[in-house]
Image 1 (cartoon, rainbow, N blue to C red):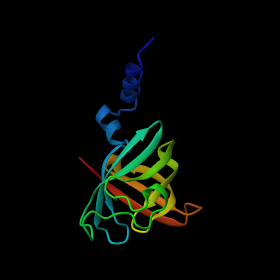
Image 2 (cartoon, one colour):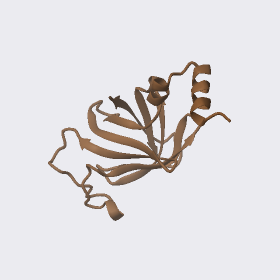
Image 3 (cartoon, helix red, strand yellow):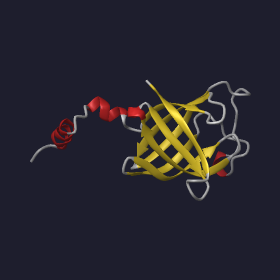
Image 4 (cartoon, rainbow, N blue to C red):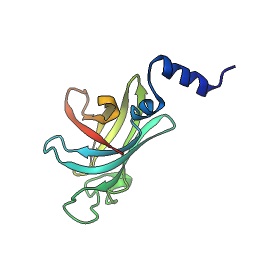
Amino acid sequence: MKSLLTVVTTLMLALAITPAQAESMSAEGQWRTIDDETGEAKSLVRVWVEDGELQGQIVELLNPSEPNPVCSECKGSRKDQPIEGMTFLWGLERDGDEWDGGRILDPSNGKEYSAKAKVIENGTKLEVRGFLGFALIGRTQVWERVE
């Protein structure tokens, strides 16, 4: 019986995908969030998969309006907690080449939205959409991978 690594390596070679390319197509990693309205970099985030669920945490806010901001508008356990270090993306599950069915928090207003994400442009960018109800009504940000 072939090992899983042998099977995966064979499959990648058959599809002409190198291990480095396959890793770069992962949603996991460090990302620079880009505000969809201003085009400015807002934060550095870490995205990972735990128990099959895509999650994201704010590592650093870039140019915050005040030092050590907290999520004063958040509800529940996030209320008045520091934004840096906060898990703001959770519950997304893989659906083909996308992640779907999760939630995303906007710490600037404390609101939660349905969320989906997709790695684009050969793994250099992550398209993240937050929406209410239907995916047609919402906002999309394109985050840049940080090496």
